Amino acid sequence: MILLIILNCIYVIKVLLYFCLPKKQKVVADADRVIIDDMNPIGVDIIVPMFNEEKVILDTIEALNKIKYSNYTIILIDDGSTDGTLALIRQHYGNYPNIKILSQPNKGKAAALNRAIENSYNDIIVCIDADTLIESDLIEKLLPYFEDSQVAAVAGNIKVCNRNNLITNVQAVEYTTLYNYDRKLFESVDGILIIPGALGAFKREIVLSLGGYRSDTLAEDTELTLRILCNNYKIRNATDLVGYTETPASLKMFLKQRIRWKVGTFQVLKNYPFSHQNKVLSYIIIPYAWIFGMILPIVTPLIDIMFFYQVFFKRDFSTVNLYLSFILIDSVICSVIILLMKENPFQILFIVFQRFILRQLSLFTYVAIIIKAITGKLFKWDKITRYGNSKAATIRALAEMQEK
Image (cartoon, rainbow, N blue to C red; front, side):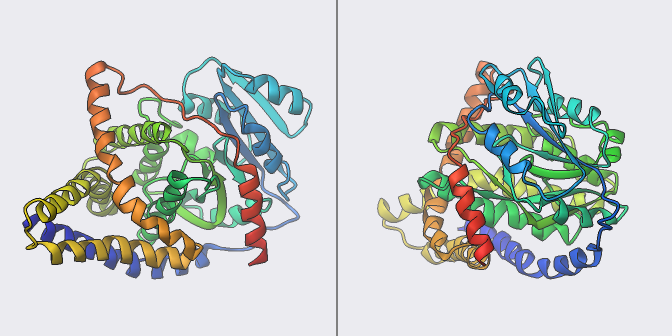
């Protein structure tokens, strides 16, 4: 009873944040948008780290080559792939003047990104995952955000393109209602928590001055984001800067990804205490990340289990009203309304699966983390399988966007 009351209060506060703070965000973003001089284009380097990406990398490079901008370079960095990735890109793009191909022994994504950044030379760098497809006007949309000298980075808007089964459709709902909307929410207080590794842009000089990506965490994108905030730089959220990415299409791959995310987030958060000099970070962002990113993913599935046990086995209906109000606030207000604003209404159907299946998997994630910790495999980077079936879905998504 008490726990449900506390949860209801927490989610009421979340609702107030979700539908009050974003009003300021639009004004801030519009104020910073200015026109870039097309006669003197700013140089941009697009960095793509690769590890066993032969199923997806050609589609990614094809999309990058269609960018409508005159001054950009593509830097491909292979991190010791054991498949045909390196040979494939050398065969198809080895002689392209705007494509630089680098390779190194396997050292991890952070090390690959750092080497590519060191070998870049333009003012702006864009880091994307090897399975991320982007639109042709990416750079034209991106550059105006950097006119503010205090803006160090810009976070892209990530959409799921391989919506071909239940688990990927549920993740699409999650990306829209949680990750992307959280970035929109916290931009209004200069507190974006994560610049997504799938699509993020940076001022090269600032990244180098901060020491680049760190290899001692499984969440290098989150760690760099917090380091940028700690140094009082601004991060912008570009809702019009869309990247289409593959998500895990099997339960096994999904759990592997979530284990990495949870472990990596814990590694990062424990190094950023609440008492940091950045007050927004200390009193809003870090507590929010702990509560909604680490604690509630354990608590809410347990609440579901306890409620159904109490109702169906003990025939005790005393907490029905509190539980239903919790579901109403959490699932309907915080998910349905956002989906109606941002997505095809058909996606609403998957909220039920997100609420009662995907979140239940969080318990298995934490159990798996405990097992991995005991066996000494907790900090091993598990590679997510690429499926290579995102191209057709992305083309359809781009066509739908152009029609709108």
